[in-house]
Length: 141
Image 1 (cartoon, helix red, strand yellow):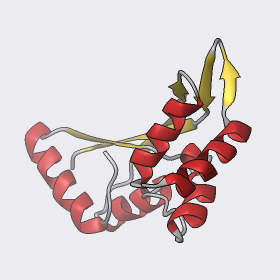
Image 2 (cartoon, rainbow, N blue to C red):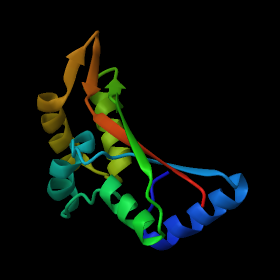
Image 3 (cartoon, helix red, strand yellow):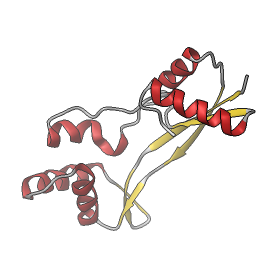
């Protein structure tokens, strides 16, 4: 679960603590490492005319918990969330849909961009994406 702001975090934490009465755990999908999700830091400005905004990170979540008086334990788990494609056409379809694009010009840009960035592995094209989740837990007090 990722928190957008402290009000959402507080409501979720209060609810979780009421349910469990003992502990709280918040998975947060960032450990401070900023690998570019599906090349969005490059694609957003080029195709959407705006920067890609990263979601809440672990430091933001920990700061929000500190405001609530919670001093949690943090365990970071690294994993891969690669996106495989059968071919460049499927990759373009995915990115066109994901980015909400339409038309031949954005598709042509994506085809050129992705042909240079996707990794060929075991007969598939892969958009590599290394992620980390911070599992944040605390004892109810």
